Amino acid sequence: MNSKKLTLIKSVDVYTPESIGIKDVLFCGNQILTINENVELQSEQVNVNIVNGDGKVLIPGLIDPLVHITGGGGEGGFNTRTPEMQLTEATLAGVTTVIGALGTDDVSRTLEDLLAKAQGLEAEGLNVFCHTGSYQVPVQTVVGSIRKDIMLIPQIIGVGELAIADHRSSHPTVHEFVRVASDARVGGMLSGKKGTLFLHVGDDAQQLNLIFEACETSAIPASQFYATHINRNESLLNEGIKLANLGGYIDVTTSTTQQFIDEGEILASAAVKRVLDAGAPPTSITMSSDGNASLPQFSADGEFAGLEVGRVSSLYHSFVELTQEHGLELSMATQIVTGNPAEALGLKRKGHISVDHDADLVLLNKHDLSIDSVWSKGLQMVKNGEPLVKGLFEDLI
Ligand code: ZN
Image (cartoon, rainbow, N blue to C red):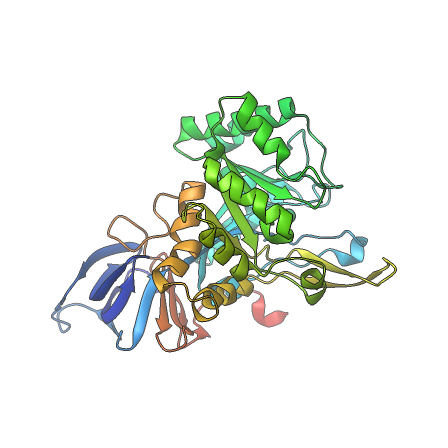
């Protein structure tokens, strides 16, 4: 383990996500010690790893707000359950923080398994948080209630992905829905967390009505709600922009297939551009990979025709598209995948490069934004685009 070594990145173009120009960045373990014009160390006296930042850009580690780290899917039968996420699927894509969640299946997938997997990935060097619950209402929990899970289990930061406007949803009433949001909020308040209600939105005609009704009929602020798959179709994206303008958070899914696009899904990067162009608050929009979810394919007559799997790396590729295909400033593109999810989820030490934040850092080659190096909690995970750290069983698979 080299996590306690001093590392000095020299003369690198830093995006915090804001652009602060060429700086030297010194960190030790998970602690960023200084970000300054010219940091000199007597390298004979201290063991310091010096990294040349010439021609490179330093951004915070990417945050992926939705990954099925224990696998997902199974909607075509037991042989379609998707595999667990492996460490380097995140780190090679510059992702240093993932939020794990269950989905449709909360019978053969459990919260206990989710927490065990989260702690396994943490031990391997990644930052992992989780949501309690699944698609369903009543919300399944670990220790008996939403409030207890959020207050007593350090990794659990909210509830999700709870399904609305979907044939697989429990179709909660507004009253039931408000109760869940309220429990998440109170659990969060009492434990210094955000207590977000993270919502899977399907393609039913109700769209975000449940959220809008909850905001109208209760004192729960819109900022408690965080709705994903908003790029599912044109009409849902417009509803998402309304939620963003009310103060809620919206998320677009970067894993996709040609069939989804042909059926009306909007590419994640294009959807982000649309939200920003519509004048929604730029802090309201994030992207997630929906990693390890199943992406089922159906034939023209509706028969199950095969399965693809969501990839965490799609988050990084969509981030690059934001700048290279949609002309976003690098600072704005970076904010979408770092500062914004940190704010939406209340991750106080994540999503920024500063002395108050963790040493989760990604070094990119400036000319094409390809990944050179990745540090998670100060531990170097990737060097020259190659993994330095792998999950224990990765080479066996
Ligand atoms: Zn979902």
